[in-house]
Length: 258
Image 1 (cartoon, helix red, strand yellow):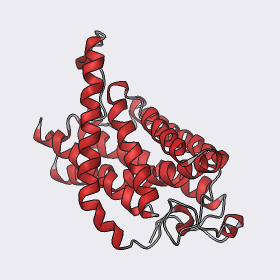
Image 2 (cartoon, helix red, strand yellow; image 1 turned 180 degrees about the vertical axis):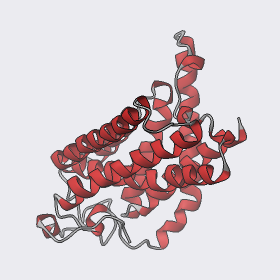
Image 3 (cartoon, one colour; image 1 turned 135 degrees about the vertical axis):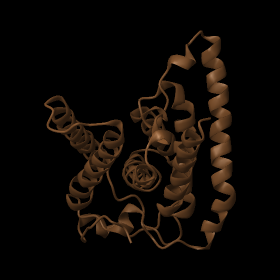
Image 4 (tube, one colour; image 1 turned 90 degrees about the horizontal axis):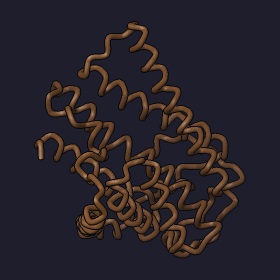
């Protein structure tokens, strides 16, 4: 079951089968406007949460050691994002879990055994080409921030903290990001544009909001794969699993020191 509550509202009136969303799935029910508002409130909630942590640290009310700061920051940001989506996407628009994409998985989920490795491998190949091109332009790749930078000191933290970080990064973060980008924005773009363009636009937005230039190609390719999985399987569980595997591998790479 989805952790996101919801009732039956105007969006529940959409019943037609939509090509590319599975045989029993309704078509897109979230508008681009609704998705945009949800993203805005996610940003506001996360900014407010980070502001509170900053004030607590600067005023000396809390002595944020690295051991304390990492779980507090990750946990607070994730809780803020989940709260924003619950209030301003799900409750505000009276969406049910099924309308967001949390439908019962079918036998086609077995395809994930090859789809997940293929998606990650393809993203890595595109990222390699992208880095090669950046290198030819004289861009200083080594000095650029990466998506793993916030976890750089993870290996030196106590085991309970590491386990909490793994939970947040590999489970909760894929959950709320997929609800937003593949549950809301893919639907929103799908109502305005052709399916292929909707996939590309949702992937570009997903990559852009991470604000990591050097990792844009990988994130874009991953976003395309996540959107295609949503359309192929007709549910959010498939992209959530790919996203969780991807983030889990990133944590393992950081922990291994490679």
